[in-house]
Amino acid sequence: RGLLSRVPGARCIPNAIHRCGDRRCSLIAVVCDDAGFQHTLPQVILPKNYLKKTPGAHLQSLYASMGSPIQAWHGTAGFNDTSCMKMWLRMISKHVHNKLGEIGIVLIMDALRVHWGEEVLQLCARLHITPIIVPARCTWFLQTLDVLVFQHLKRNLSKKLIAAESVSSENKVSWPDHIRSMGKSIQDVLVTQPW
Image 1 (cartoon, helix red, strand yellow):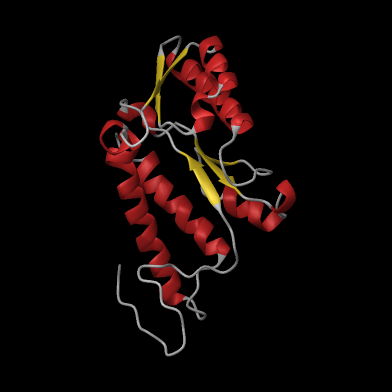
Image 2: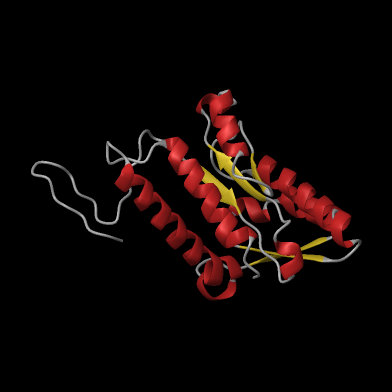
């Protein structure tokens, strides 16, 4: 989105945000059909940390500044794996039952291998969570996050990153600016919107 200028000899990638450094970050997003409860649901960021080490105090404070209920889980490879998934399931189960009592939880997920691994499904059974796995290549019309939410989240984040890039003296988005933009977008789209 926006205008791109071609500089002779430079590589130009349409619609690309130029970031400083090689970072990655995944999001475990969750939405529900209860507008009064949506703003409390934990949205989990999995930043990639070199050698799975915890980042310095400055970066930790930036992640913390994204505000509740966003959480950053440090010490990950930057993507969801079985241990992250199990920790997330326990957290969601505890959060839902503490706030809403003993109600049934139906969890709709895509067919990412980690979502239907044996350990994850066994934990779902112990926590009384009913998992529904959307078949591969069907999420575009069956999974709420893909159908409704992520297009708004990506558009919102893209606008914020373009704005940060446009005011940067190097025409690049620093990782701290990227973190701030992610936090604002997650708050705008996942936390405050009733899905």
